[in-house]
Length: 357
Image (cartoon, rainbow, N blue to C red):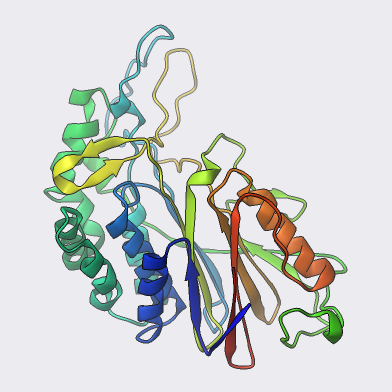
């Protein structure tokens, strides 16, 4: 455990963590998490066009969530005939609609305090000299509209539009409208704070208030804790950044760092495979529907607000590691992680933040 004054950030990579730390001096936890997420877009080609999920709580922000998962393409287009069982499905048919830039923009607009220019500053510095710098500069200037404008729109439609065997349309690229949802808060019976002598975090907690697990409202749930989506997803590809500011507000952003997809070489990007191809004789996924993505994240707190934020990543057992860490906190007032996945956590009490790795 590392004690830090007032605020702290922790992430799945040093570059992302440094970007979040930089914004904590200028903005709040949401600004820091968004800066970290954009830093991930700067350092990895497969992040920007993939999913983004955000969980926010405390410090006067309430309990909120933003759903930036990739959407199924095909809005505004006639239903395709679908592929036969013996037909080869082109990679273009597996590329979905990216909502990540719009979701990060919405997070700053609805819950941040820094300017969008400041939030994107670390990412632009990291991307300097790479093709992704121009893409991120366009997003910094145009926000969510950048995806539906050239050069991103023309490259994506050429790559994954109907002419290439894909489903992506111009209406898809103009469709992102992220909304702020209320996060789920699941009470855990009998999970009050433990005796002071047993608390590993040395922070006050109320024995009178029941503890709750705070998670994304669309998350799959197993006994009151997050579980992997029912549909298959690559859990090991999940990456995250967590931040807590001096007001005790927490923010977690989680994305996918995938290695499969179609390269947009001139832009330095890779479009990952999240869409479901249309197949003859099978129910079609409705255009605009969110596609499953891993998000092994959660917070633990009381009705007063979150106390600890968690994220697990880097291996297929991330959800097991996450649930084990939450259970160890609820039962024994200590954070323990067992498994291959890496666990990080943040807490905040008495004006000081604590980082657990």
